[in-house]
Amino acid sequence: MALVGCASKDSASNSEEGATTINFLHWRGEDTEVFNGLIEKFEQENPSINVEMNVLPSDSYIANASATLLSGEGADVFASFPGSQFEALQESGAYVDLSNEAFIDRFSESLLGAGVKDGKQLAVPYQLVYNIPVYNKGIFEKLGLEPPTDWEGFLKVSEVLKENGYDPILFAGDISPGQFINPMVMNNQPSDDTFAKLEKGEEKLTNEWFVKTLSQIQELNDKGYFQKDPLGTKKEGAAALFAQEKGAILALGSYMMSTVKQQNPEIEQGLISPITVPEGEMKYEGIHTSTFMLGVNAKSEHQEEALKFIEFLTQPDIAAEYANGTGQMLTLNDIQYDSPELTETAKWLEKKTLFQPRYTISKEQVSKAIEIAVQDVLSGVEPKEAAKKAQEEVSRAIK
Image 1 (tube, rainbow, N blue to C red):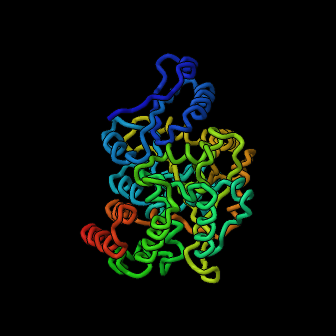
Image 2: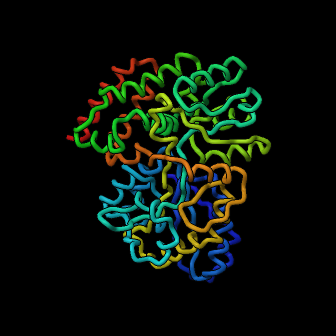
Image 3: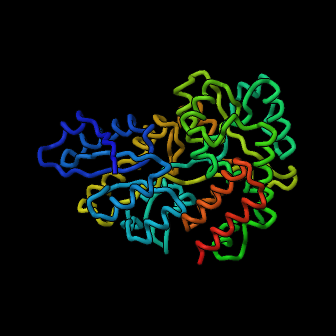
């Protein structure tokens, strides 16, 4: 497994000879520069501890991270995704119980649940992400468009964008299938625990709600509202097209706003949801996720030092430096945000949002089946057939 070391040489030189080295593993390569600055501060305050940072690609993170975490020779502090990935790691005993750590009180209690299992706080979600598309406010303003509040409105907005030479929706084939499905399904699913029922065999993907969702994704594709070859476009490519203002909506999430801003400092961004039902039937305006869940490896020989590092990252001034440097909203209380993107994202704190449905799934095979169903529809498979294939995989998984 290839690990990319990102700790700065300067910060390491500030530490005492013979200091304990801990490894910090995560997937956000775009945060490397900010984390290097914070690691240098941490090492200055804790000269007996060195921090070596390693970054893995997000789409293969858990597969590659699991082996090293469980070997006892891997990361001491590591990030994890909520849902099936957290479940797999906790089942293997990867986490130290953080329940009695004083830094827990710094978090918004309502956002800590993703890292709890059997009453124990095994990981602390550091980031608050809105898993809904980002849109170009300047393009919308130029064309006299407002974020739509129903499905017909979403189609009309997409048509106007297409008629004016824009790709209405930029889709990243490696990430969007697992992201875009969440706001598409949030008002279609019969209950908030639909995916939990799916894993119990009490609900099926062949039922009307999921087939309808796939049919609406097919409709967007058939009408040319995605860019050419959406499945062949990677996250970085979709973000670049959006930054170049080739498209008006980026089917990823709020976590991309800082990356886009770096590429185009003049762009003005907002968040938008595809509302798949008539306005009067809307239950939720968007999707949120508490993610980038920080934990301490139960097999680490340096748990005390690892806990010190997490405590440092959760200090309000340090957390604010991370948030404003990376453009990420956080789950901690008393954070001062100073960027336009974070100010815009903070507006969604007042809106009615649903925790990401896909992260309520505990089995990776089930989550993957849903993603593949989206990919299949974009490849030309009929929604009913894609749903049937996905349900067959779900049935195998839950058996």
